Amino acid sequence: MGNTSSMLTQYDIEEVQEHCNRAFSQQEIVSLYQRFCQLDRNGGGFISAEEFLSVPEFAVNPLSQRLLRMLDALNFKEFVAFLSAFSPRATLQQKIEFIFKVYDSDGNGRVAMNDMLEVLRDLTGQFISEQQREQVLTQVLEEAGYTKDSLLVLSDFMKVLGNSGLKMEVEVPVD
Image (cartoon, rainbow, N blue to C red):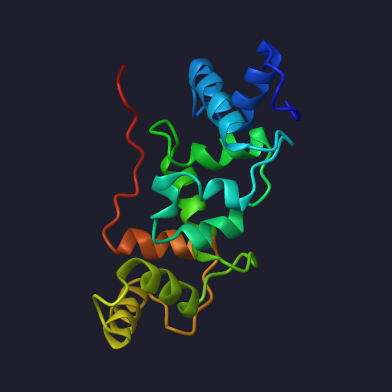
């Protein structure tokens, strides 16, 4: 799997499926491998931040720079694990854990008010003022029982999301 010129074996596909908690079918993994090989321009078996930015949808994402900190030099297995948070088969828990990592830019396992403000700045740009962002975040935190000085771990972050109106139950699609 390290060398992008090689083909995936059935064992590789199953290993990647397990690694991403079966968020992708075997055929989807093969398609992702083909895309990975296209992005890995130098054939080194890793995708750099620069190669990620060659994907137009990624380059225009307001959180692209924040996401790049999470994913520079990913091998194929890590690439699939990263994308699994966007799969319809990913659980709500997996999606929330991914969002938490986006907010936790320094990777210390805690999200502070400033981390949340940075993400809101990226998402809202000049559409709302800094004062409005702070007011909204302060209100959301207080409604969940926290202050603007709180450092949120994942379970706290989930509580804040739950209190902000995010549906916190997992819906299982019926095939």
